[in-house]
Image 1 (cartoon, helix red, strand yellow):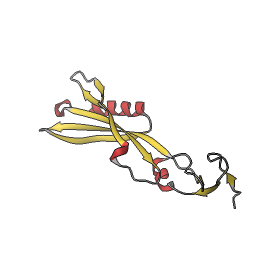
Image 2 (cartoon, rainbow, N blue to C red):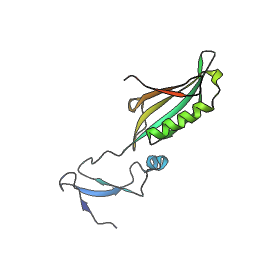
Image 3 (cartoon, rainbow, N blue to C red):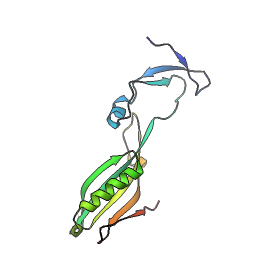
Length: 136
């Protein structure tokens, strides 16, 4: 049995309890702890995780087909992964890619409101990857 702890976020008006809210989602994202303390009185801090998704597309006969893709918790890591994946694709298919910033909140399903494209990437004939910041 655990000892109740007064919450500091609401100046001690509430008591913290141990819950397992969002534990399955957190485990899938690799951000899980064995349990989480939540205050009965206040909402407390929002448990959110930001991720950067990268995708490679190949344009064939005017149709964009998805190629390699992945996700990372760091923007620079996603840019490096996208750069390597674009360099491995055939130049004949006019490859391009994008990096999407997404916010995951534990206990909820991701929606399109928490997702926005932040970079577009193209591969030039010399084999260099050019990043362009997406318009907001």
